[in-house]
Length: 138
Length: 138
DNA sequence: CATAATGTCTCTAGCGACTAGAGGTTCAAG
DNA sequence: CTTGAACCTCTAGTCGCTAGAGACATTATG
Image 1 (cartoon, rainbow over the protein chains, first blue to last red):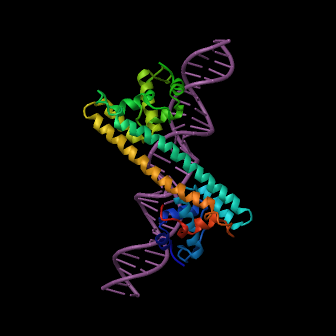
Image 2: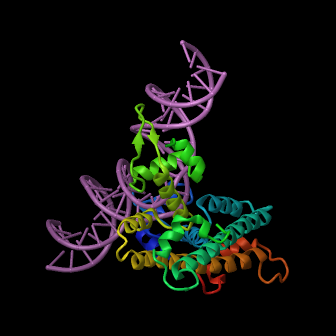
Image 3: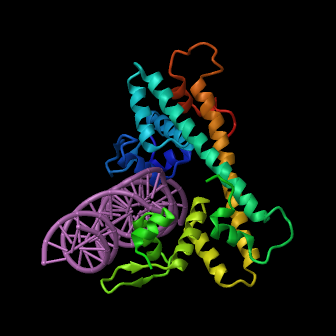
């Protein structure tokens, strides 16, 4: 049995964040001391580690809720869980694609137009002002 | 002179967003009709296009504010503007790096452990529960 | 055993960048 | 002149926390 601060140290999840997870239903309310302080056990620790890992991988709170529910109902859980993870993967890939387009455009803007001499006006500003200067993307 | 709806159509920026930009100081308050409705001119249109383009590239409102200020003070503006754009570029690159690590991990999780037979428990869930199963990253 | 320091409690508000809705007014077309 | 679409302001909600106030609990030290 350990306090919220101890749980925080062990999981690297900040104390207010732990309380937040409880309010949104990701963590079930733990036991309390007589003085109304939260006391956690090994199960609580494991659950929070699971949540933290999933958050680190960018899963939304909602997705994590679904995954936790699946843990409690092992029948059919694997396919459903894989679906959620696959959705997350395709989400991540979409973000990567978009960011790569941005990277390309920003690189072009910051380098000026092929380095062919310095233009009169600031190339960054004129590029942003005139969308026609972009290459297709974004 | 055109209305906020017309400006919205021409820039593809939603009406409430235009008003929001005004409240946060990105757009200067335009003229009004006698009946208190906003009327924009070509300058307003250009400014909003600039903002939209910069937002599309992921610049924060704050960064865009700085860029707009630089437009009005052409001395030294180019270096400062390039700095902002370069910061944005490195930000984008950092995000890409992180997302690529996530992509790798998610791919591993959704595919199961090298496809070597189907494990008893759901691999997605056990992977998330046990951080030790990860490869170094994230 | 008293006190002090640290930890914890609840509650509210703030972040960024919008989005949605209520309830009321104005404009442009017919 | 009437209708209906577009406009106005204001407040509150989104996501996933984070920060702060003010009060109570626990633990370490003298």
